[in-house]
Image (cartoon, rainbow, N blue to C red; front, side, top):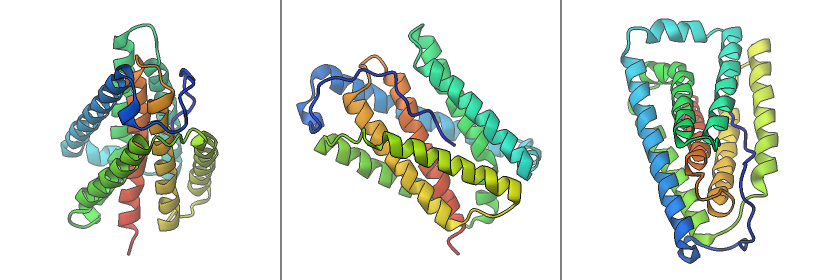
Length: 240
């Protein structure tokens, strides 16, 4: 569940420490639009996922996606769609193309979440999704607040995120091919990777994205939050 972390962004001369209180009006407006779009993407994801889980097609869809090699195909398709959505969101052609990219990515996330949430709601115990949502929003909110208030620049995490993402993908592929289970330890590492990705993306929103790239910036943040939520659910399901 990765996303290209390279940004077509403006590298400016802002200092490494500059909290939100010292930003100019354009940057503050950009952050407000970015986080508004992030919130709307999360709401859209919840709506699409709820419709999927309530549909009569969810059970056969989950069965079709759950085989080892079928899951590899699903991951491959997800990565291709995520790449296309990311390119659209960064597009300078039109705002409509950017929104199409964000919407496409929300849909892709909803479909790849479908098997996990189907299992979690039926076999994960009462309240597991609510707990996962609270944990994800709490951790994400705390990390975001830290970066915005302190002004610490986490752009150095780009390499960590890229290497960690490749390592995670290779591990998932190996697990599917050789049939071993990725348990709670792997889920914990993926939560740390998601936290690193969120720190990196939040710093990018503060220092690197152009102020007209709020749709693309919100997509990057959305990817980070969704990655964390996915593996918080996995962690909670495997905690016993």
